[in-house]
Every structure is written in C-alpha cells, then in structure tokens.
Length: 209
Image 1 (cartoon, rainbow, N blue to C red):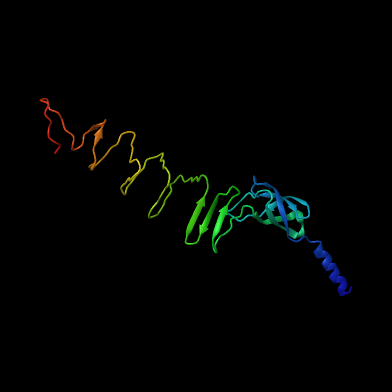
Image 2: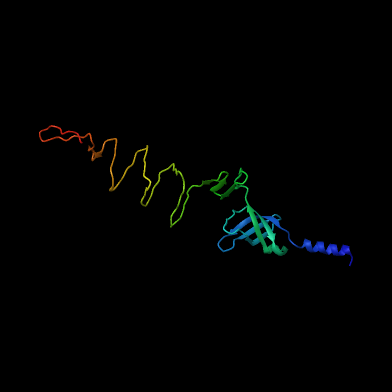
C-alpha cells in the first residue's frame, strides 16, 4: 500500500469523527444531579439530553435560544458534552479589566468592581443565616425604613437625629439618668423643670429644684 492510499484512509477516518460544534439551546432539564440540554445544531439537527459540564459550586439554567459549544466525546454527537453557554442578550457589558459579574435573565446582578467594591442590584435580597450575620464596617447606612422583628441591642450607644424623632409603643425600662433640653410631657401635661403646681390657696409653687 502506497503512502497516498494511507493518507487518504487517515483523512477518511478523521472525517468520520465529529469535531466540536456550536448550537442553540432548545430545552433544559435541571431536576437531576446532572443538567441535560436539548440542542439544535447549526445545520438543523436536534441532539437530545446532552450533559452540561458545569464547574463545581456554580450552576445556571440558560434560557432557550442561548448559544452553546458541544464537544462530542469519542467523536460521537450523541456522547457530546456542553462545555460553554452564553447569551449576548443578557450579558453585562462595560466591565473593566479584572472585573467580574454574576447575573440572570431578569437583570439581577452582582458586580465585583475595581477597588474591592461589590455592587448588588436586585428587587429583593434575602439572606438566610440561622447562626447570625457578622458585619465589620466603620459605618452602615440604609436609605429606607428598617424593621427588626427581634430585640435590638446597642452596646455602643444610640443616637437619633432628624426626621420625626423616636416613637415607642409599650413599656420602656431605663437604668440610668435621663437628660433633656426640651419639655418632659406626660399625658399632654408638662412635667419638666418649668412646670408649676397650684396650691390649695390658689398660689403657685416654685419651680422644680
């Protein structure tokens, strides 16, 4: 057998081995331990239940119409695995060098910015931490109302400024002194240092000492 015949047979053998190809995601099954995806090939072929090889610790459900890259194991399309998925309609653009973003099809996103800054943008943020949440920061700000269903402990003191002041419903227990520069009112009556009593002879008592 001459060399040309050998080369021809080698080329024929390689041509029978399917190379990596691109496709469109048609349907996703995310219920099991391994995600299965139905792919529409660029030539109109439909490939069922291809395994999506996801990285450990991260999973996603790519929407229909997303692009994917399929690598046929052993050159067989039916044994292919999906190694990458993308969808330009939802991808976050404008990231700087070294920046990273996590996002979904609804527009919720978390962007790791330069300068050790993390931006979170969503409608509702739910945190479940039965053992507690620890925040170490010089300052924590909130632009909206804060509601605490449990007890609030302020070991470093508490200051309220502006707005409508502070309002309490229920009993208030205090250990220590109360200092005020304004009036002290109880049931609509002034009981502060500038209030006066009327004696039985209709004369006023002196101010509180």
